[in-house]
Length: 441
Image (cartoon, rainbow, N blue to C red; front, side, top):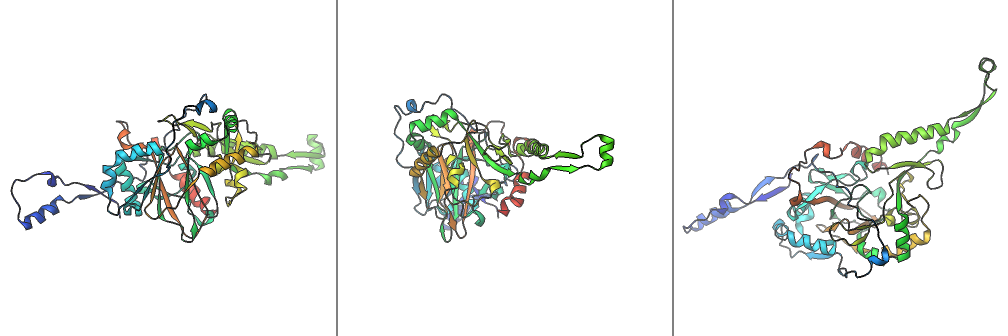
């Protein structure tokens, strides 16, 4: 059944100077009740994720830390239901909510019955005025829809990945970043674990050792998002003994070398680079041997800054997914991702980041993590530039979901048209990867 939007009936706005008998008053009350209208199915009409807003030039860590204003002590801030609020609460308080979000970076809505269903969750975000968009890596298929008609993606709830720890990250690539994210709990893990957690990117930027921070800023980073091992080609180079008749006619030596490995490897790289990588819309470069394994082809993002300034406040942020993507850290925590999905983080020149620096980044990140023990109907509304998020391992069934937002509905351009198919990537690759790759993990 579709979610119902509530629109006041026009009849309820017409005053009357005549007193009403009880029966007439009861009829008037019925007339004044909201009229239910079917919400629009957003399938195929969700706008693309907006481009990442970069303001990362000329960052001097020491200078940036001078004369900084104190950060809010509470992140997330909390709004707790008294048991009576419905969609009107969010509509009436939308301006206050958005102002609070800009200040604290994250709001935890607790105990609201409205958001216990996909439809109610959509009513919540529409009442606040948030404008949904596709996941930044929608075409990768790594996150499937929980309710496409409501622009709601499923979080990583699969049993096969339940023992995989998801480290801190913003939902972003060098190319695309969602402005906001709303994470909702429909069912916490039925046995144990699965806590959602966050960290303030502004606080991490301030807490990192200045030398470590400046070094990684100056050298920049590149993230490898996937591996394809080509070891099966090791036997593609071999020697053959040609028949005498061929030797006589061609003049080739009796013992002839056949070298197919390098041409096949290069052909595979070009094929993936030209035909597959562009479908992921991440500006990936396919390279062999970046991690020291010559037969491994890796899909590597472009050079990026690990710091960025907030597009509204100008606050310096730790805008980097090292805590989640560094192989050194993944190897030291629960991880069930197959090798094809293993990630790595390098310096911008593809040299390794020292383990001591990764240990320090991990220590500062862990210090700033706040566990959020969400219950059904709880929502965590995050500024995706300001706040990083992750998920702990769990046992049992778990159903959390998320919607991404490119901005606010009120800020849409006058010529906005979400039905334009040319303005967003399609769902074909998303569905293919989910069906044949992710579901097989």
